[in-house]
Image (tube, rainbow over all chains, first blue to last red):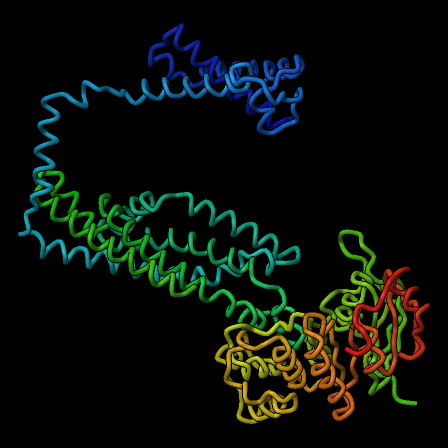
Length: 337
Length: 259
């Protein structure tokens, strides 16, 4: 009921906003007045909710009612699609969203096939496909730096994530104090994880200076948060039987974790960790773009000077390494199953 | 008259969801008995065993084990010592997969291990010898280096018995020890339980389903129904009538007597 109203409210509100914007054609100046705009949007949302309620009262099934229930009226089996309100509602909303998206992204075939721009793209691709192998030694040197940056970030993240995984597992953290710790840490890790490694790299490049160290720290923070979540989910899904058995021998809490839980989660842990290293190598190249060191930093330097043949060489090196690691980690993870 | 090893007084257990698993259960267990608890699934058998060693917290009542009141213990070290003395085996064996049989058996010694020793898995030669002796006792010593998950069900349960023996217990709690085994293996495992009961003098409390097994192995029987004890007596005292009263009208013993 509540979810239906909110969902329909948002949909109808969106359509009303689009219509109003199309009719009134506000200037950017006017759109930047957040206060007024939000009042308008709130009004539209409220109108949408009212509309949803009214339609239900009229025994018309809205999209929200179909999704979340309860239905306002029984759905006839044999009715053609164009005689169902909610299908029109979905179609119109999607169309409107598509139109808004096209306008917002300034989509233009003219730009895409503009002669001048097109010639530039051709020049770029010519460079990329005809790499200058003279920079290969430096590219290799840099990608080695990137690989080890990712490796160190993963290794340093393992012990932290390992400890956190037990403190963040619901089945271990029982009792009132433990629950508070669990909740606080979970929230903290969720926030940490929702900040992209790219952002962490920017933060650390200010903190410790531009270079591989900043990139490594950024990857490490992100890895700790991601691994801790994956690890703790494994801990939560272990079999209870062995835990009970070890407890019944008179073992204490830490012994129980070490003997009953760790053997059960070790292989998945290794599997996740190998995959994380693989992800970190890919991320490390991106992080280099904002000053995290390694091959990414080299890439952005040549790109800034429009030296496309050198960029082509770097991209080739990255592609080979990422592909090789991806294969290797897939094989290792397969073998660990 | 043998000595009383365990006395349970007015034991009740109500789960957080409101289910009353045990209602004022009174029970006395003598040293050296092979006591069997029967009853339908959900009658409270497993809960009773788990309250005895505090894997479950009793809601009210008292449990006296060798003169100590287990139900009132606050110090976790005391509870752990009680658990060591009341070893337990389970329906699904609950061995640690991917670890060797020998290591599984030695886990019975964890209660006496320091954190440092247990972290590095340090077990003395003496403990290793004891573990092997116990494996020999259940006739499975040759499997010591094998990974526990590669054994058959009956073998796993025997390893679990060996692990329990390594705790040097005075009482063995067996929670449906043969419920997931085939009839032939069933008897092998039950025979070993009787052996440790008679030869080592370890008191056994076992939850069982099959009446034929009860008649063959138990020295005394208690029947639980809806969390209450409805029958106490010798195994040969369970008549057809009692059986129906415990298991409900129309019930038939699933295991034939030739089992």
